[in-house]
Length: 388
Image 1 (tube, helix red, strand yellow):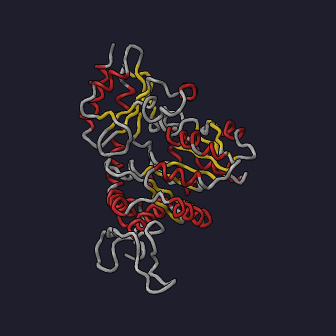
Image 2 (cartoon, one colour; image 1 turned 30 degrees about the vertical axis):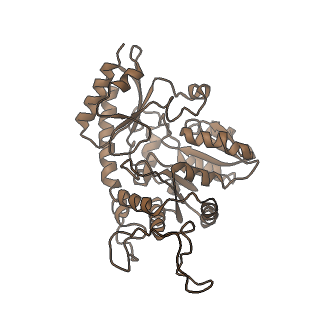
Image 3 (cartoon, helix red, strand yellow; image 1 turned 45 degrees about the vertical axis):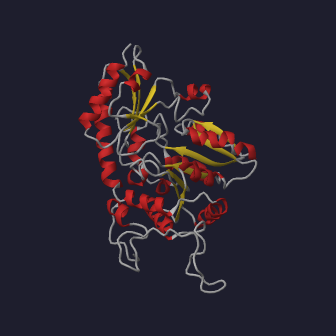
């Protein structure tokens, strides 16, 4: 419903933000507009809608919501996180180069290495947590820096504001994948980023039942360019999925609070476990990026990666799980475990994985909202089962 915004906190914005409700009927939920086209009053005269690839009211409500939550000028909804990433990368031309973090989602690496490289859009891998190393990678043909913070899967933290300053001094765009944190915990546009990406399949969807991607942009100029790409290439999110995503975002605050509460307790338990060699979690005060993350995000999020001591086998660990599922993806209400080297990051060559620290022993956990005692007991039993 068209109205002023009487709230200030993101806990309220996730429920009432964007285009809230339906003015025609008073429904508090935006209707699902299952239509491909719209009747026009006469040639050149319509009610703001022509064809649902170009724009759909349900999708528009979601796009308005993500723009508001991220503090952007516009939002865009796509059929998947990779469709959103592909649209953002389509802003660039032959001869351009993109600098990416040295541990990013494997699909991001794959689309650059196997698709965009064919169009002479190249990439450089750099440690974005090291500003000196990143600056060295910024050659004249670099047009964008694409980072994740926390990064997938090692949860490395990058100083978003510092990288934005470095990028903008050279006329380079900063793209931040905010999937792990969501706008509830971190808002990169407010820290200086130009484009924010989400695999909305993850925490924004939150129930492992929708595949979707979202983008929010800072400037009107980028919004115009991305709308053209979205319409021209057509990788749009369908109305029903848009509705489901709006519904899910309404509970984002309560879900994330529980996710993080559980993750903090599980990370502490893993740190004290004699069979665990190393824990990666930016909410730990001992984590290398703890201070930077505390400056730019509300907390450490709900993703944990860890490695077992010698004498324990990761394969046996996964076989020993009973409640926590061995599965791709993350961010659902249920806890999930994954093996990055053979699953999410299998498309990255082994020598590069080894170079950046994605070992065959690395285990990634998406900590759900179940009872923390049940989660901890299942992980502990699986660790015990992993002993050789």
